[in-house]
Length: 112
Image 1 (cartoon, helix red, strand yellow):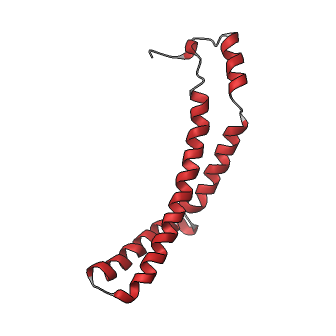
Image 2 (tube, one colour):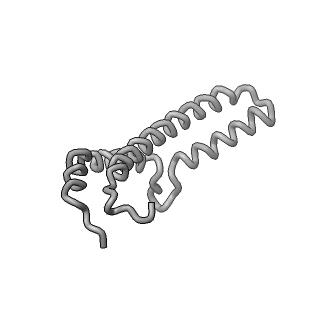
Image 3 (tube, one colour):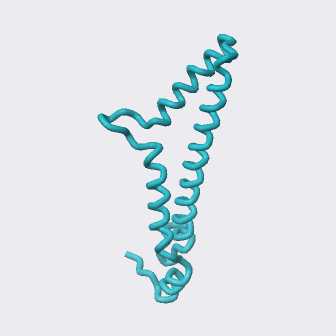
Protein backbone atom coordinates (compact mmCIF):
# COMPACT_ATOMS: atom_id res chain seq x y z
CA UNK A 1 0.00 0.00 0.00
CA UNK A 2 1.23 3.49 -0.85
CA UNK A 3 2.32 5.76 1.96
CA UNK A 4 2.05 9.50 2.08
CA UNK A 5 5.40 11.26 1.96
CA UNK A 6 6.41 13.75 4.66
CA UNK A 7 6.22 16.70 2.23
CA UNK A 8 2.79 15.58 1.06
CA UNK A 9 1.58 15.30 4.66
CA UNK A 10 2.91 18.77 5.40
CA UNK A 11 1.11 20.17 2.34
CA UNK A 12 -2.09 18.48 3.47
CA UNK A 13 -1.72 19.82 7.00
CA UNK A 14 -1.08 23.33 5.68
CA UNK A 15 -3.83 23.21 3.08
CA UNK A 16 -6.78 21.65 4.87
CA UNK A 17 -8.71 22.65 7.97
CA UNK A 18 -10.51 19.62 9.44
CA UNK A 19 -13.06 21.97 10.98
CA UNK A 20 -14.53 22.36 7.49
CA UNK A 21 -15.79 18.76 7.75
CA UNK A 22 -17.61 19.60 10.98
CA UNK A 23 -19.17 22.54 9.16
CA UNK A 24 -20.22 20.09 6.43
CA UNK A 25 -21.99 18.00 9.07
CA UNK A 26 -23.72 21.17 10.29
CA UNK A 27 -24.90 21.83 6.72
CA UNK A 28 -26.19 18.26 6.48
CA UNK A 29 -28.06 18.73 9.74
CA UNK A 30 -29.78 21.78 8.23
CA UNK A 31 -31.05 19.58 5.40
CA UNK A 32 -32.33 16.87 7.70
CA UNK A 33 -35.27 19.01 8.78
CA UNK A 34 -36.44 19.22 5.19
CA UNK A 35 -35.67 15.68 4.08
CA UNK A 36 -36.00 13.29 6.99
CA UNK A 37 -38.98 11.06 7.47
CA UNK A 38 -41.43 12.30 10.03
CA UNK A 39 -43.13 10.39 12.83
CA UNK A 40 -44.58 7.01 11.96
CA UNK A 41 -42.38 6.91 8.83
CA UNK A 42 -44.40 9.60 7.08
CA UNK A 43 -42.56 11.13 4.12
CA UNK A 44 -40.77 14.47 4.37
CA UNK A 45 -43.01 17.51 4.42
CA UNK A 46 -41.45 18.91 1.25
CA UNK A 47 -42.76 15.87 -0.64
CA UNK A 48 -46.28 16.60 0.55
CA UNK A 49 -45.82 20.27 -0.31
CA UNK A 50 -44.83 19.43 -3.89
CA UNK A 51 -47.86 17.16 -4.25
CA UNK A 52 -50.04 19.98 -2.91
CA UNK A 53 -48.37 22.33 -5.41
CA UNK A 54 -49.30 19.89 -8.18
CA UNK A 55 -52.93 19.92 -7.04
CA UNK A 56 -52.96 23.70 -7.01
CA UNK A 57 -51.33 23.85 -10.43
CA UNK A 58 -53.93 21.44 -11.79
CA UNK A 59 -56.70 23.65 -10.41
CA UNK A 60 -55.24 26.85 -11.86
CA UNK A 61 -53.56 25.71 -15.07
CA UNK A 62 -55.84 22.88 -16.18
CA UNK A 63 -59.15 23.99 -14.69
CA UNK A 64 -58.85 27.77 -14.78
CA UNK A 65 -59.55 28.24 -11.08
CA UNK A 66 -58.15 31.78 -10.80
CA UNK A 67 -58.92 32.07 -7.08
CA UNK A 68 -56.35 29.34 -6.33
CA UNK A 69 -53.51 31.21 -8.09
CA UNK A 70 -52.33 33.13 -4.99
CA UNK A 71 -52.02 29.90 -2.99
CA UNK A 72 -50.22 28.28 -5.94
CA UNK A 73 -47.57 30.96 -6.11
CA UNK A 74 -47.21 31.34 -2.35
CA UNK A 75 -46.48 27.63 -2.01
CA UNK A 76 -44.21 27.60 -5.07
CA UNK A 77 -42.13 30.41 -3.57
CA UNK A 78 -41.98 28.65 -0.20
CA UNK A 79 -40.78 25.41 -1.83
CA UNK A 80 -38.30 27.29 -3.98
CA UNK A 81 -36.84 28.91 -0.87
CA UNK A 82 -36.50 25.53 0.84
CA UNK A 83 -34.82 24.06 -2.23
CA UNK A 84 -32.47 27.01 -2.42
CA UNK A 85 -31.46 26.41 1.21
CA UNK A 86 -30.92 22.72 0.48
CA UNK A 87 -28.91 23.50 -2.63
CA UNK A 88 -26.70 25.94 -0.72
CA UNK A 89 -26.12 23.39 2.04
CA UNK A 90 -25.18 20.70 -0.49
CA UNK A 91 -22.84 23.10 -2.25
CA UNK A 92 -21.14 23.92 1.05
CA UNK A 93 -20.70 20.21 1.81
CA UNK A 94 -19.31 19.54 -1.68
CA UNK A 95 -16.85 22.42 -1.34
CA UNK A 96 -15.57 21.10 2.01
CA UNK A 97 -15.00 17.62 0.59
CA UNK A 98 -13.46 19.01 -2.62
CA UNK A 99 -10.90 20.96 -0.59
CA UNK A 100 -9.73 17.65 0.83
CA UNK A 101 -9.79 15.63 -2.40
CA UNK A 102 -7.96 18.42 -4.23
CA UNK A 103 -5.10 17.90 -1.78
CA UNK A 104 -4.78 14.17 -2.43
CA UNK A 105 -1.05 13.49 -2.60
CA UNK A 106 0.39 12.15 -5.82
CA UNK A 107 1.74 9.12 -3.95
CA UNK A 108 -1.80 8.06 -3.04
CA UNK A 109 -3.35 8.39 -6.52
CA UNK A 110 -4.19 5.23 -8.38
CA UNK A 111 -3.98 5.19 -12.13
CA UNK A 112 -4.62 8.91 -12.69
